[in-house]
Structure formats: structure tokens, C-alpha cells
Amino acid sequence: MAMERKKKASAESGALVLVVAAILVAVNALSFFMYWRKDATKAERYTLSQGSGHLLREMKSDMKVEAYVTKGLPKLDAYVRDLRDLLQQYKDASKGKFDYQIVEAKDEEQKKKAKEAGLQEIQFGEGSDTEDKAEFAKGYMGLVINYGAERDKIPVLSPDNNVGLEFWITNKIREVRDKGDNIKHKIGLLTGHDEIKLSEPNLLPSQGGGQKPALQGIISQYFPFYQFVDVDLKNGDADVDDSLDGLIITQPAKDLSDKELRRIDAFVMKGKSLAVIASAVNLKASDASMNGTLNTHGIEKLLDGYGVEMRKDVLLEFGRPFRVGVWTQSGPQTARMPPILDVQDDPRFTGEEQLLDTSFAAFFRIPEIGFPFASSLVIHRDKQPDVAADKFKVVARTTPKTLRETGETVELKPLRQWRPKGEFNQYPIAVTIEGNLKSAFAGADKMGVEAPAKSTNPARVLVISSSQFFANPFARSGNGPDMGQMGMMQGMPPGMGGDEQLQQLGQAYAQQIVTNIILVTKNMFDWVSGDTDLLAASAKILQEPSLVYGDVSKPNFDDMSDDQLKKQDDQMKKERKKVQHTVAATLIIGVPVLFALLGFVLWRMRQAQRENIQLA
Image (cartoon, rainbow, N blue to C red; front, side, top):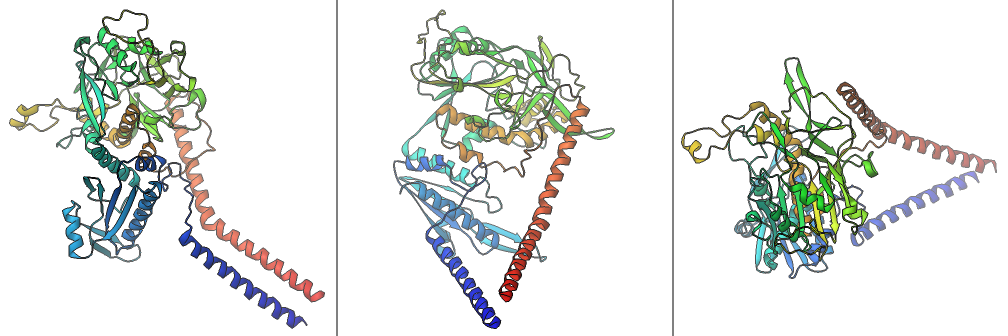
């Protein structure tokens, strides 16, 4: 009897194994027709952004992409699979307006077509983790995009890094679409006041020579759908062109006249966008002394009318200044530079204390932004009574451990002893206003400039109170003067006469901050032009943070010395290492032990059932 029960239990177990195996096979078969996955990353890194899909659906013509790929190495095969999955998501989101073809260029005819399309043949290599050898393959990895009469390409895609793949593909699609549909995004740049221009090559230090990039050149090269137009108001005798999507004001060195300010206001009252990227802090280029003057050059009159007061000061951030490692006689040290604000997205600061609003278009999902030489802003909501509270908001603040320094001149050279003097506080440094705005000069003398008392359409104003937001402050002050053609003829090296120490600091600033500033600039132009669909795709070019330490308490910056802040940083590093070790131990030891315990419990339950059966 007992033997029959054992045979019966054995047969039931075998049948159960077969049933489970059949279910797994069926599920895998169904997955071929019904594919679904969940993207849990904050930036939706593995899911096509809604903006990319909207861009495709709004196209006037159909688009066909030919993806020339090379296979044969594990890395290449995985990259091609990811590329195919992404292109399929484009197709699914386009509602029939996008299609693609994967072409593995093996024969000479396919290789010829790829070369004629402008793709680059490159050699791919991959090392072995287990053997001392490497494998190589030669071929193509790029896209050819066809849209109406337009044809363009991405000549090379890198299998070594697929971060931001959607970003580059979507922006190229947008570029080709705009050409084919004759769409222009014209951005005005105010000139005539010795401004810090976007065309200045001040992003990198001049060490090493060679041509240095300018922000405007980078944007024009990678995002050519933007067209930049210089706007010279000729002391108020000229209007701002109505065909512009918006106007950008960068740090001036000369006063704006009252009539020029009214011209700008009249432009905004037409429902246009205005971005003011300036503060009261003025420094000369190639001046290694970094002695600044405080002057708002008339901008404060315009902003005050919109409800944003720009004060004549410079903010010194002792809670979270820009920091960089330097060598001293006593060894490596961390230098803190309070005039350079390192503003980070810190979820521990909420509500009226929020440091960086990463939901705002220009700062969308960007975790860290540098604000060099900022002035404090004060909000007066009563001057825009018809603007909703959520449309008139602060989008960037200092930490609570910030000081204001006033006067006519300020010494801002970074490597000095910064001794806090005064009362610490938290200050707004970036503000946005959107809606039917009241004129900044309603009821005042029009000076011959006609403008309604209220904007005819919803308008937008952005104020970023940082004089060198678009520049690398150390490179701008530390690079030698531009000798022009005369210097080249005399054989002078680029950057001759510059400050070597500032240039070294400029290199560190470039590595930490400049990439994010480029993305902020591109996002800002999207905001100015009213085209914010692609912000989520832009965020995907940033690396995903490794871990989030949500159990770490909010830092208390009040009444903390530099030594105490350093101890706080060291404590944070220890907590991070503790979390990392806990996670590693859980994955390596905890999970297998859990499965072993589960198996033991199930075995004991089964043994108990058998004993009960025998006793029955």
C-alpha cells in the first residue's frame, strides 16, 4: 500500500514538472507575439519618450531609416539588438509615419551604398574577460534618414556607449524634419552692450593650444534647427523682430537705455519669451585678478516691473560651493570657492527650500548646475496679480548657508581665505513667470514705444541671476587675451599670458559642470521656442546615478565650519560605503541563503506530509 502511494506521488510530481515546463514554453511562445516590459529608471532610459513619439506623429511626410550594422562580436550583437528595439519603439509610436530597415552590410554592394550615404567604415574591437586575446570586426554602424526630399545620416554610432542613443536619434530626426517642412526656430541674442556672447570661446582653458569651442558653435553644430539672430536695438530706435521665438539677454557691460528696455517689454507683450541670464556681478575677460564690480546696468528696471527684484550684490555659498582638488605644500587639499554656486537636485530640500526644480523645462532632470557669480532675487507676486502661483515660481535657490556681499567692488579670486561675515540665509537665484503678463512699464512714459498694458497672448520670462552662467569662469579669467591674426603671424602660442592656476581650475570646472550647462542651454532654447516635447530625450544623455541614499538626513548648513562640513562629507562617504557593502552582501550571500532556507522549509514540509501518510 505504501509502495503504491509512493508511485502515485512520484507520478504526480513528474506530471507537475511537465505541466510547469509546458507553461514556461507557452509563456515564451506568447512573448514572441505579446512583448511587454517595465522601465523603472527615473529618466525612462529604456522607454521611448512621449515627446519623440509626438514628433513623429506630427510629421507631414513619412520617414524611412536604414540602419547599417555590423555583427559578429558579443558587444556588437547586443548593441544591434538594443538599436532594433529602439527603432521598433519609434515605429510603434509613429502611427504609421516611421519605418526602418536593418541592413547588415556584408557584400560589396551594401558596403558601397553605406559609403555613398556618408557612413564611416570603422574597426570594432572587443577584449575577452577570461582570455588574453581580443577580437576585431570591420564594418558600419550608422543610420541613413530619408524624409521627403531630405536625406541625412548619423555616420557613426558607438557600441561602447548606448547612453543617450534616443537623444541623438531624435534630434537628428527633428533636424531632418525641420529641413523638410521648412520649420525655423529663430532665437534673438541682444547685442550692443559689450555682452558676454555665446560665441565667445570661453568654455575650456587655453592650455594645450588649438581651437577652443564656443557654446553657440556647439549648439549650432549639434542642434542646427536653431537659428541665432543678433538683435541691436540701436539705443531704442529699433524694434525686436516679431519673427523671433524669443530673446536672450546675457551679461552686459554697458547700461541698457530706458527706451531699449521698453522695446524689449513691447516684444514680450506680444506673447513672446524672454530669458535674462545676468546678475549684478561684472568681471573682465582675461583678468586674472578677478576683481569685480557690482552694477545691474538697467536690467533691474525691466525685471522689477515683472515682479522680480535683482539686488546689487554677490552671493557667497558656504553650504555647497564649487569644490576642486588642488596641490599645496602640505599635499592635496580640497579648495572651496563660494562665489561659484554648485546647485544640486537634493530631494531632502522640499517646498520653499527646494534647491533645484528639475521639473522645470530648462533644468529638466539635470542633477547639478553651476551658477557662477550670482546675485540674489526677491519675488514680488503682487506686481503680476493675474499670474497663477504655480506659474510664478523659484526654480533654483542657494543653500541656507549663503551670504550677501555688497558694495561697489568685490574680490572674487578663488584660492583665498574665505571668512564668513554676516548672516546666513537662503536666496532665490532663478525665477520663471508664465501667463498673460502685465507690462513692466504700464502707466509709465512710453517714450514713443507702443505696447499694451497686458500681453495679448501668454508670455514667458526666465531670470537666471548668474553673470557667467554660459561661461567657464576660471577659463574666461585665466585665458590670455586673444591675439588674433597678429599674434598668429608673430608665432605666439594660444593663451599666451594667461594664468596657469586659473586654467587648471577651469579644466576641473569643465569636467564637472560644462556638459550640464550645454544641456541646460539647449533645453532653454526649447523653452524659449515653446518646443519642450524633447526634454525627456535630452535627459537620457546624462548618466543614471548609481544609488539613492534616501535615509540620509537633510544636511544642516547653519553654523557649520568648513571642518564640520568636511566631517559631514566624510560621514556621507562612510554611509555610502556601508550601503554598498550591504547591497553587495545581500546579492552575493543573502539571496542564495534565502533560496536554501526556502528549499529546506519545503523539504521539511514534504517529509512531514509523507510521515502523516504512512501513519494513516
